[in-house]
Length: 417
Ligand SMILES: Nc1nc2c(ncn2[C@@H]2O[C@H](COP(=O)(O)OP(=O)(O)OP(=O)(O)O)[C@@H](O)[C@H]2O)c(=O)[nH]1
Ligand SMILES: [Mg+2]
Image (tube, rainbow, N blue to C red; front, side, top):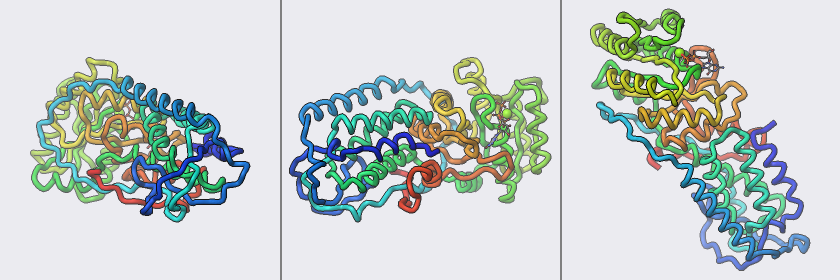
């Protein structure tokens, strides 16, 4: 069953298309507009209006309703935005290499028409559709703020757009939805491999630190990243800085042995910052290219553990900090990301376990909640199951049960957009 199936069923069964319409003269649209334009109503073709679609009921109260609802969404958004805590200052300048990400849209240019007398309005039927979408997205584990963002974008795109024929209405709704979901994932992307290569030019060894709560996949991701870099001809030292969990050190050193990395284990009791420092010193001494610091999983609300993580961060002064989030954790992963971000100001996220039946909400919300991109994704338990995270691939997979993928258009997104 598709991610959006419930919402799509509602959209399909809009039995009377006039129930989301009001009639008004619209200004002539002088140039063709594209669905990918931010926050613009989507123009659609003029058509012969069938009499059963005619409906102008409740237009004034409906507009009032819409204004109130939009207002409520904005208020809710403001309230739920927590003040950002002071973040630690990096001691190294960030040299992340930006990359254009691929976005997704549905091209509805061919539906563009110059004018239409009837437009989509916030009628009760429209509101019901939006509320169905809200439930669908929350059930998919998206965070409230991200859901509000999608609903606001949908309203901005749809309300006031000329009313299409019944068959085209679905395409218009799909297009608005894809545009809204796509823009959630659109934050400054950077390229993992190119960033490592660029940093290596003048600052080896490059230190990469992995953080996150318990069991999200940090150690596995440390091994996968090491494997990826070793395949690129680089030498890797892994630091077993998880000195909390029995077995964590052996888990990492077993991986290291299999993939040909050196593992630095605790030599000074349980001080994880000291392990990280030892690993960096050892890499400097032996001329290794990369140090990957595997840290212990910790709940974001345990302040003493988070302070300890900050100490590792301070001592190791990593070039890249990656938050590892578990796609299966859904909305929890978003809260975790937000708190880790306030402590450490990480550079990007790795979303693990995307090969499972995760509902997709975490991916859609993390970037929006932290303003940091998901750069890598874990798609299995093998060493090579680590891929660059591409919003277009992710959305295509997420939506392909609901929307015909052949209607998608891939668009390049400027990383600084
Ligand atoms: N299916 C799947 N499983 C994964 C993925 N990444 C990690 N895992 C599994 O998730 C489990 C936990 O992974 P770890 O790497 O030990 O997680 P961790 O964050 O280091 O855990 P702690 O050190 O206890 O905090 C293991 O069974 C991994 O094999 C992934 O991308 N896909
Ligand atoms: Mg671990």
